[in-house]
Image (cartoon, helix red, strand yellow):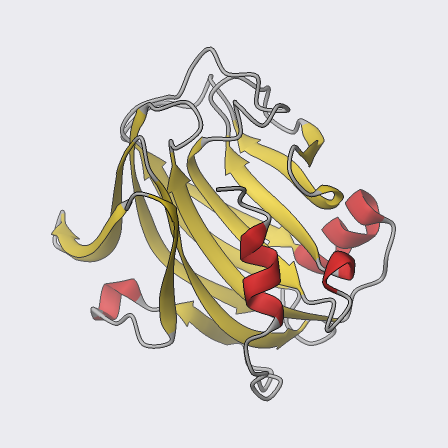
Length: 216
């Protein structure tokens, strides 16, 4: 099932209030053993997401076998107040040999989405996918194979990144929307994560640490 359906799903969800700015605005409090507000969406099969202890800290693990499903949290974030998205992640194996710009290769060991809804005009929904690529170079950018240039892919990690080693990310989401989609976006509506192997029928595992927005 085409993953663009996810964007349509997010559009019809009721809106929450814009989050109040703070120095640190939690989105995924996995280390606190919490998944409140996070929902699951399956496209094909079930990627297994679990809160588990790793090295004394609770994290969200993902294990995908020829499956594509993700977790998302609808929360409006004011990017004029908290533009920086922060998280940590690591993967257990790479998905190699894929043309990640094709529909058949649109699988990633790990990815984090930020989504702006298009309201009733679902085709106006926009997104940035921060991905851990298996066959694309770090800092590579390309349009999503299913959604076109409404959803841009940005490889924060590529084949050169070490396996089973934590990587810590910090992205200015507002600046990324300006650069990648040419728009000054002040509010996003949802954050999502996904480890998926449904198009390639492969296997991948990943671990996600806490996710939060910050002022700087």
